[in-house]
Length: 592
Image (tube, rainbow, N blue to C red):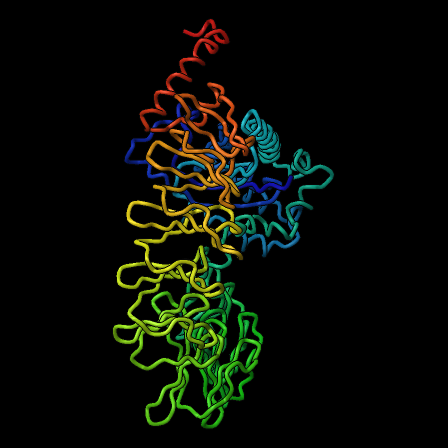
């Protein structure tokens, strides 16, 4: 199993090992920590001296957010410095590149001296968090084995330094068949500095200035992008690229500091919806976040309309293109094309003609017969148009489904239908089917179901409710004669005539049981051997698809009703617990 080693510096230890260290006052502990290293499958030998002090071990807590190996940071840094001094003293024997070692050493100890402000080092051999199920000992055995390995290697390091004999380092068990020199000079470690860099998020860079130009550094202060840009723009939250400029030309850089779009354009705008609009020699074009030109710089003007749609100008004509360059709305004489967004952020389009004339188009690029003063709301594939005191419903093709009248529309996504209210009475209209009910009801709501294929409208008339199945063939499941409905299982609905009077009906309208239950719960379709559980004549039962019932065991009752507040159910729950109690006492006769 691949697992990271996670090293950090922090100001606290788990309660299980606190007695090992001098206590800190509550004001000294702020639960601060600094990530130091994230390394795959090993704790590199070069950092073993960080745990040269007496190591304490604690199992992981909260799925890896605590626990591991702990040691005092100050003593560990001192031990590591002694090892690096020893390596430098014997550089002719141990180093392939003394200059690179010196550079790495300086950066490493500057980092440790400036940033390691907390009292402890923590090493988690299971990474930052444990994703899989914890073994019986909570990974404690892994930590104990790693502790023993670190101690064995540190003992060899201490002996080699005391004897002033670098050849003894080859005896470190960690090395296996390698020599210490071979291991030390492996490029992947960069003499220890790569271990620190492993904790750096490569996407977090800070802009810095030098000699009037801008570059970027990582969180360790290392220069990732030299100071050679006149401008480095902002990385907006959802965008991969930021605009940059140098020597009067513009392009784009990604979050790692790579110039993805070369600085060759006369102008470049901030990225939006993963696209950047650019100008070259007075011509408009579009690039994507991979640096590809998706709309060539051949248009006289242009701008982003919405997500992956663009308005472009050629001569005195404007058109709408998609991200592949396909023309969706043909070129036509106009002053501009703009996107108009409703309150939900959905768009339709306005073409500004001569003499103030405006034409409107749906998101399907079909003429939308509306006026400038109309209020338009987009409901997925449909348009609710309010004109004065009247409202109409149009489809994405611009066709009128329901003409202007004094009516209100409420889109019900779950039903793919509109609740239409006229003179305080409501009906249900599905564009694919037409009117499903007359506008004579007091309210219409959707019944929640986890099954997308099952859609039901609860139709209210005063205090009474009925149920309408909104499917390819809509039909009434229950007439408007009941008080409540609830989803039980695919194809089965609960209905009631009073608060404590429930029955079951199939989705086709077939009554399975009369209202003989005081309580009914389908657990959203998760009753293994039935449709629902219910309370009947003071007893909890499981109800089968044919309506027959089977008494539940006391254990099943407790599991099903734990946490209920209903008085009748609490009485049943207490009885079930009382029935279980003697059995538990027989299993635990010595429990006081």
